[in-house]
Image (tube, rainbow, N blue to C red; front, side):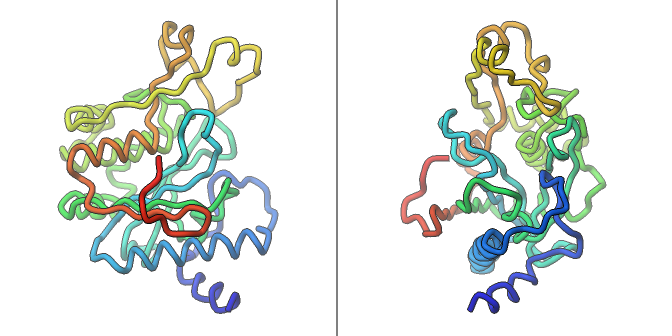
Length: 267
């Protein structure tokens, strides 16, 4: 059965290898690969059950429970993308550096990127928006709205920096307003009802705790924010809450600890 599962999962892998946060050429442990393959098959099966060209899929790549958050990363999953039947299109930080890139990955790769767990959430969007997004993503790199200068806590609307969730939000805004630049795309999402989340990082912890790395730029935020410690950011929760409030969400499904949730959990 495990062999059959892995064989079927090969259809969810693109031609390219792993990409993103994994920076060493070490083979993935068999157990982790099997878990990622199982999640990929579960998600692909759910996607096949609905006639939608695109959905959002969230995963738990970092433990954000201290901030009251569950999902740390979200990407678009596109049906019949040039790279495969169900292809995750998302922005990834390059190995903890200050750079990022856009990737088209199979679902196994999407869930095999050294995650905290295999919890997952699918968010289906209303048909017109989903189709516009799918068309846009199939045409990449045209209209990519990508700023390669990465900041984990990028200020919403920042011109100098971007992170994975900001790219998703701005891509949604561009599809809503046919915007051709990042500033216009973010403004469109704001007009449509987006409100940023806030994460608290005390100044003392930032200085004494050594919270400095190439992919975190506190200077993207004004001095008042840095002294107060409440940083506005685009989170998975803020994206999904915004889309739901604005009437763009058609349906959602979620899996925690390998089990389908009858009632959706917190984001």
